[in-house]
Structure formats: C-alpha cells, structure tokens
Image (tube, helix red, strand yellow):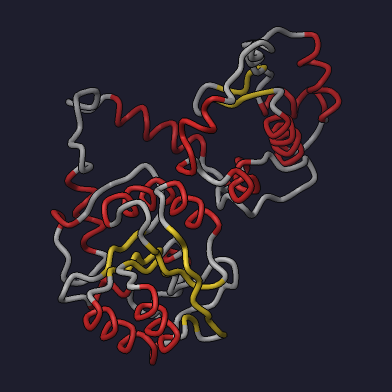
Length: 296
C-alpha cells in the first residue's frame, strides 16, 4: 500500500491530490485501516499533507536556506532566553513510520472524526461574526464552560490560550522576572523546564515519592531559595504518572498561604480521569487565589 502511494507521489507534482480512501479501497482491494496507516506513514515522512475536509495532497518542498546565511549572531544577541533545544527535541521530532508516538499526546489521524470535524467547521464558518475580531481573552461561552468545571470560579477568571505549552510560557512571564526561582517536582515535564529557562527562570527540583511532592521538602526549598512560584502536576504526573495524595493537598495549600507561594497547576490529563473517583483540582479549593490552573 505504501509502495503504491510512494509511486504516485514520485510521478506526481506538489499539490496534486491523492486518490480518496474509497477509491484506493476499490482499486487495490484493501481495508480502510490499511489505507489510513499508509497515509499516516507518508504524512510523518513529510511526503504528503492532509487538509481536513479536502483530502490528502503531495507535500510542497520546503525552500532550502541559503548556505551563505550566517545566523550565529543570534546566539549572542538572544543569550540564554532561547528554549532548550535538547529538552524539546523529543517533542518536535517526527517519529519513524513503525513508531506509535506517545510524546505529543495528539491522536492519530485514524482516530479523529475528520468528517464530523469538517462538517462542524463548515457550520461555524457560516455563523455571523465568525471572521470578525474575537476577544483577546477568548470566546465568552468557552470561558464560561471552563469556569464551570472548577467550583467557585467565574468566566472572567478564565483565559483561553492556544495550548498548554503556550499557557505555561504566558504564566511564567506574567508571574515572575528573569533570575527568579521556580520550584518543580523532580523529575518533571521537560516542556515546563524549557519554558522556564526561556523566561530566564532558574528551575529548582523538589523531591517526590509514590504519593507525589514531598511537602516538607517543599517548605525547606521555599525557605532556602525564597521562591514564590511552584510548578506542579498533581494529577497523572509527567513522567511518573503519580497523583498527589489527598492527605498532602491541605498541607500544600496551607504552605502556599504561609509563604505567599503561587502554584501553577498543570492539570493536563484531567479529562482522562475517572470522575467518580477523581480528586478535584487544587484550584477548586483556593479561596485565597494561590493557584493558576492550566488544562489542555
């Protein structure tokens, strides 16, 4: 299947549309899963690109950079505010064709309801005001929905960001200055470390165990560093999968009040938790406003 499509790509031109899934099934006598798998492999290799609602097309070649260009000056001009390339490399790299990518958290194309999404986009495009200027803080109904997921929160406390990584960068810049310390669990999400370093912050690790962050060690770290910012993943911690034990939540919040500590709660997998047994987000019980809650 893939060999057949590669031959089509080699004989075609950039922008040419590939035969539809139905046409390939009829011509080659294969299942739709086989077609989707072959197309996914070609997408990952960069040979084709898909446009939801339109089809799959031969990818246009990227314009090569001039060999004479010298951008080494940027290293000095930008200094240490650049994201850590080594840390982010696993998140940006295109996996091999026989690899199931678990790094990005993005569903495979075969699992996406492409037809339904295309239909929804067409319906949205016909709504009045769709192409007008939206509020910078996000659409009001969407903000209201997110607020309803946290008890006691109102829509004006919600800001819509392009994604979790973008929200992290925004929060770090808003709550701190270059040279400040940000406390993190050890280990922690590499994207958070990169975002912190790009903001000029110094990540300082705090030990954890099978029940999550060690609150007594956190207090020692706050006293030693004078930190006023903590990055925390209390639910399905990345990379360990640990959840913060219920008996540690109240002491953690009490510590935040005692030391005027801001907590950036990265609740990235909250929608995959079992609502019958899940512990509420820290932001759901935060009367004094110490928690910035991020979900994606």
